[in-house]
Length: 557
Image (cartoon, rainbow, N blue to C red; front, side):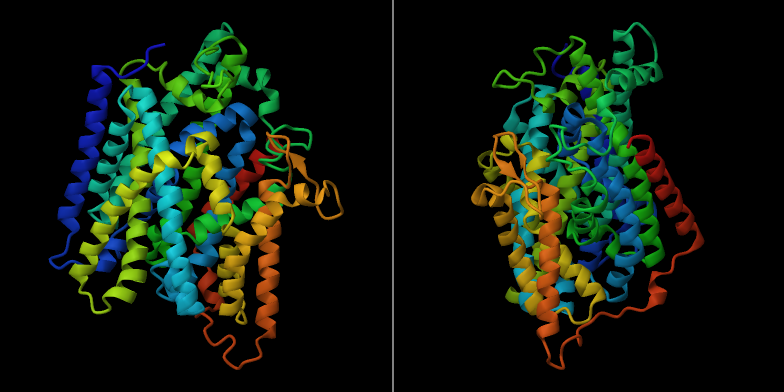
């Protein structure tokens, strides 16, 4: 196995860098206005097409934690981890039909702005500060750290150099504003998919060669035969990975909270569509849904192939971690190191594209929330458009530097990036989603309920996390606990999210009904039934996605 990159790999990567940077500069020069505009900088108002919106959402979503973490989970638990990707496709349809028209009709540009418009300034400010901390300390930091770790492992370059290199590349793209991010993300997704498919093809071909046949399709057939237990979407209770994906919860429980909050109430994601018209925004989300169906082929299937190859005697040393045991997260880097020169550079560019696009998208969202919801609101209410854009650019650089400085101290590598992000955001996402959902569709939802759900989500999640150990109640009418990797009784993560969400909704309903003032409901949004109607093309596309999902879950039940 050859580690590191060769000259042709660097040349392929240089071509990728020049194409992305050059195209971004061309877009910036072509579409820049004579006067700096904050809405143009943060939202690319009116300039993103449906394909740019969809590609940008996926590019911002897929990063090192997917390539490394989900491939590792594919190695451990198989196709079941794909539920995060495939359920997201269905979620994007829901967001396009029900969430996006509400945002656009009420001229919502940031998530804190929605909270201020629907509830009050206090709720908005608290959540803006929270989102900034979460985005910088958890998301931006973990993406940068894991990205640098992956790039360093594959290329052989110094870890710190990789971290600064990725950060600088992302800043160059981000300083051009959302229009540059949106259109360069199309290039990023192209490299991401092409390079990812090359790695998958290699993995399947290797499997085929190991068992005396030829061709990727033969390799896929061998994987089905040799790892049948890795092709079940719904895990049974006796599966060692059940605590990560607890059975039918992935279809009817907490998985919906994860996806609806992420795709529908997340500045990082929705920002791509907030500056577009409703038809264009919906088409963009639908395109993202189709791309989501493809992701498991790129990030999960290689992990399953690595499992089969390892079981057949390959990678015995390469798959070992520092403690001498198999580390599933080594699966994707091990496969990349087997690529021939040139193809390795292409796949390396794909991984870099995923990391840089996610960093750029996250940094832009941090900049947007701080500038429009903190700086303009508390520090300079009469700030000019030029001052807002300048502040946004400064925030991008500062956020990236903070992420570089604090990332080595968070223990991201010990938890695994995918699990780290899910665990940290999972404490608050049930409450946030409850606040948004009832804010959309229940007029009596009030600010007291919103604050109770926001703060209560963290408290309830922490209590439920340790509830079985604290009470000794391991199996009751209300829940069943399971042993985690350290032998502690826990309620599965997704089940905790579902329970927390229901409790948060109950608190909001109680506080809403208890509010007898005449003002209750006066801050409701502008909503009418006609907003949720879709055109024929969208309906056909959505039906196709749902049909594919039904087939997938039926075949791999």
